[in-house]
Image: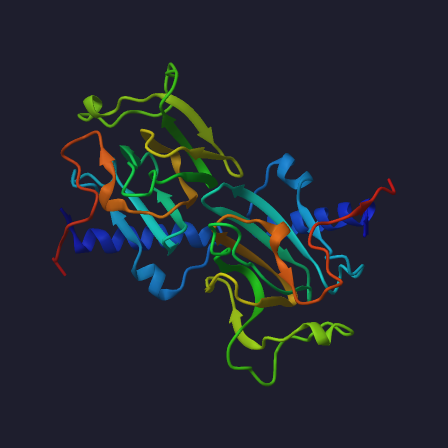
Length: 183
Length: 183
């Protein structure tokens, strides 16, 4: 659960970060920035801000905004019907992001697993993405990512998004935002 | 046919335009910028510069750079095998671009059809795209586009690209660049 006032603040902050790096949104897009707090009620630590440019039955493109140190928790995109699962390419536009996928564990990690959620992070193969660097995550592959100290902006190019089918390692997580109206 | 020296100059110019708006490329990507001169030997008027970020069997993402007044000539993306034809979303990042698609003709046009090629431009429904504005072109739909006086940078999100199957209205056009080595 996240309060409407907190959603609005996060939208303004995300729009400012995008604007600062020269990414222009329409007024409608700014109002519709998705603030994913994942049901853990700790947006600063575990959360993600998303601008969905387009999501058709063939492809999808989004801009992902991470505040400093913010983490998108571990999940995978399973097969749904004829779809083998979402395949996605992350391209860092600004800042620095550490992406973790299945594979040989990196030690030590540069990211910090969110305190209290250690049990729900299981893949530790680290990929550091700086501006201009990108990585493609195969379908149905566990992954999570965290912004470094300044935050990050990441373009996501992918097959169709069906967020409601995402499988999170942490059973407490709810992917689709539930907003408490306090304004 | 285009000379290698001309390709190199266009690559540098495109990379500079991208850099100016904060879009970072790796060194490898800069070297691989595709300079499409379409076989008309008049890159300044009819041409397009492309950075291909990713092109999988499911989706594709590119950055398109248009120099001032440069035109990408009329074409469509036909069905190929099981693929109903490429569907693509153009999102203007910088500058201004006029996109023409099938539909009611706009009159007068803001763009100028390239002189000497008037016979090969047949669709005139105008869509003006400024930064933050986007438009999705259905599969197998004729379209062409031209940058306004400062040039333009356009992000393209799409289904898989199979450029070799593109159908151009102008039979003189060759989509895949042929380069004369003069360096």
